[in-house]
Length: 331
Ligand SMILES: Nc1nc2c(c(=O)[nH]1)N[C@H]1C(S)=C(S)[C@@H](COP(=O)(O)O)O[C@H]1N2
Ligand SMILES: [Mo]
Image 1 (cartoon, rainbow, N blue to C red):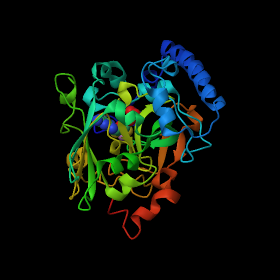
Image 2: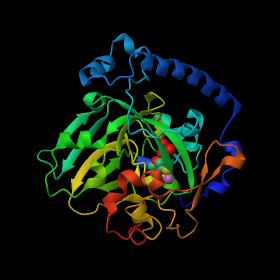
Image 3: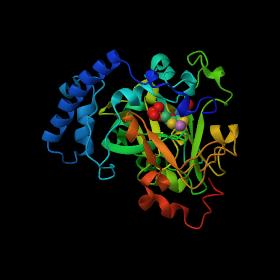
Image 4: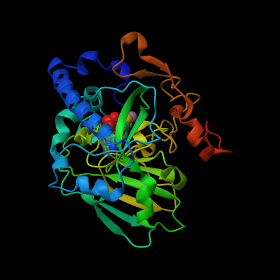
C-alpha cells in the first residue's frame, strides 16, 4: 500500500485476452452451477444437508472447487459484480509480492491442505479446528459485498461463507476478551516475497469483539460459488465489508482472543495513515490522498469514479457500533 498508488497501475496489467477467455468459460460453468442451486429450491438447506453435500465422495462434489451455498438476506443487491478475472488478478497479498498481479502468479505455492485454525488466548480452552470441519460448521451463504481498499479502488465480490459470530460461539471466549486478533499463515520458505515490503510478519489484524460478532462480518471460504483462489486468501479469511480491505486478513491460521487492542500490521507500520478502526469514511482523508471517491475496478473509464459512502454503504447496519465515538479521531 505504501509502494504504489492505484493511478500507477497501467490497465494492461489488469486483463489479458487469454485469461479473459478462461474467465468466460469459468463463468459459463458457474452460471450452470448457480442456476442448478436455485432450481434446487433456493430455500435454506439444513446444516446436516449441507454437510452431506460437502462430504468428500458424494456426487455433488463433481468439481472439487465448487461449494454448495444458500442465499443470504445480508447480501448487497443492485450492484454489478466485479469479474472473477479482476477479483483474482488484482490483489493485495504482500506475502506473495507487492504488485497487484503478483499474488495470482505466486500464491499457487501456498499449501492449503492440511490446514488448521488454532484458537487461543482468553478462551475456556484452546482448540484447533480442521479446515474441513470449519467448512461444515454452518450452511455456506452467498454474500455479495462491496469491497473498498484504502488505496481508493473498489470491487463488488460474491463471497461464500458464514457469519464469523457462528464460529466465535464455538470458541467459548471469556468475558474478559475485548478484541479478537487474526494471524495469517507465514512461512518465509514458502512466501519468498516478504522482504519486498517493510511490514512485520505474520500479517496481523484485529477487531473489537462487537465488530467481530456483527452478522455482516464474514468467515469466508469462497467466492463466485467456489473455494477461494489462493491469491484471495485460501482456505479461509475474514471479510469486514464496512472497513478498508486491509482489515480482512487472508489465509488465517490463528484466532486469538485478547483483552487489549492487538498489534496490527498496518497500524504498526504507520499509525497516522492506518488506524485500528479503519472504517470506510469519506470524511477522513488518508494523509496522502482523498478518500471521498473510489475507482470501481473493471468498469468502463467513464463509470469508474464513484462517491465513497460512509461505512462503505453499510451505515444502516453498523453505525450504531460507533455511537458516541469521534470517527475523525478514531479512524
Ligand atoms: N495476509 C494478508 N492479508 C491481507 C493482505 C495481505 O497483504 N496479506 N492485504 C489486505 C488488503 S490491503 C486488501 S485490499 C485485501 C485484498 O483482498 P482481495 O485480494 O481478495 O481483494 O486483503 C487484505 N488482507
Ligand atoms: Mo487494501
